[in-house]
Length: 121
Image 1 (cartoon, helix red, strand yellow):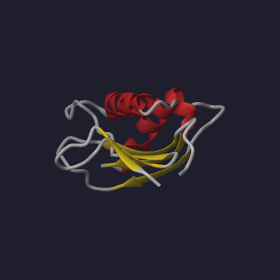
Image 2: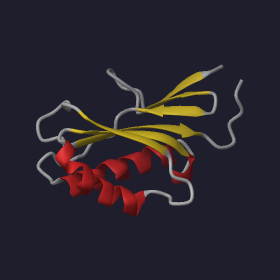
Image 3: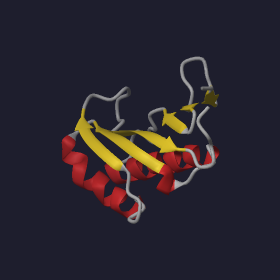
Image 4: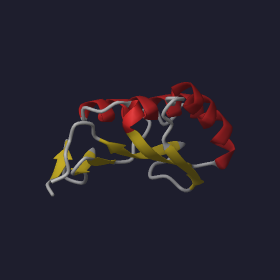
């Protein structure tokens, strides 16, 4: 089975695909001074961009891990998520609280995506 990388850098790739499964790097907000709703919108926009770069769409997202720096932000994140998620094809999801990599970062999301039209080797 062939392993390929999307936008590899010195430290990580935006995604790694194995067969028809893509494992995305953690998507983080652009504005670390913003509130949870703005940061969540930014993270989901980044997720949408990477998914599109892989030739997939929102309904192809199989699972998402959501990491919050403060579980008090759960409802704010969920409000934005509920506007974004594909109601007819929601992914599996887990949410947890943890320290995130940079000060001001309130949310990070990691996804696994099924790539359409790709046959496993």
